[in-house]
Length: 222
Image (cartoon, rainbow, N blue to C red):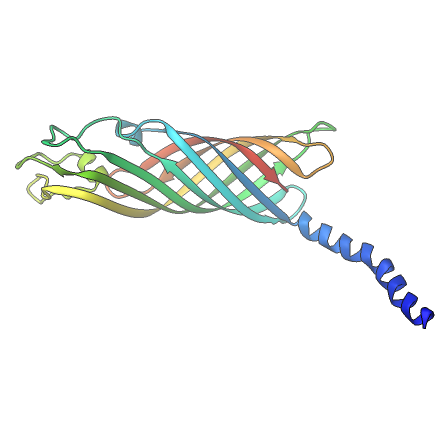
């Protein structure tokens, strides 16, 4: 009776390290990141919006010691830095950009024996820019159309005037590309790292391209 009970326990005890090792190996193929920081608009976007925050998170797979792929979700705030002509009512404007992108990342996690590393990454994906005007915004008749009106979602007629009298919200989606560089500091005896990263994003938005360079700080696991 006792012999029949001990045998399975001994077997499980012997097999447990192998199962744990398999789980560790699985984790080594997985990468994760989360962070936030500031987003700096670049021309032509900088003509219409100012500096604001950003947030990002992503997951992916490690292909080898120095090569990884990841999918990222990001949010960028795009606050207006100028008004629309001479409005009858002052609008309360909110602009947000969301992105789903895929990236290839080349990384060196430790320079020599130090905890300092760096990485390069590049990719692209889908971006959605959403403009919301909280208050009814009236554009005077025969207002000459300019790129900023298209930026905020107003339509322009064939004769060159703003064709819509007011606007509440508008969304547009487009493809885009990005690339950048990051620096890491590895926490001792773990696969976690603190990172500081800057990327350049170019989105082929209608009428006015969306261009910005977020500076992000956060944590990476890989």
